[in-house]
Length: 190
Image (cartoon, rainbow, N blue to C red; front, side, top):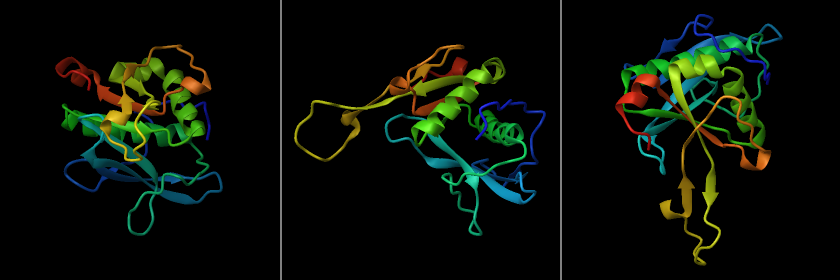
């Protein structure tokens, strides 16, 4: 996936929300081979287990059952337009749900780095719309012998991402949280 993505909400695909809550939207993107791919943007209905009021945003190609597979790699003709459409779907949801936050999971190091670079490369634009947080999950190193995990085993402390900050791969955020600037003024983060 390209790292030179330029987010611009004026350059997006037609987004069709499939519900009144704006939790699921579909759009079509043209791939480099000329084929058209249906993509979905889904916002979970359950909050993150370790961060209140944070709802995961998933995106990717959809199958015939409208299920998203966010692990498939596609080569779009216009990655910027795809990401702008995803951002628009998220912003639409947050505008309707001012007390909520959206989270995007960098499911592996490559994706986490790509999301982080995209945030940094579009910092001024995204910062005009959102407050963006990065989160690292840390498993408690010293704990009892139990293999059961619970909320106390993890620390999920959001940190506002700042323009130009650089992080080594070992310290890279693996989860990103967004809320609108209006939300940031009205509520307190996690």
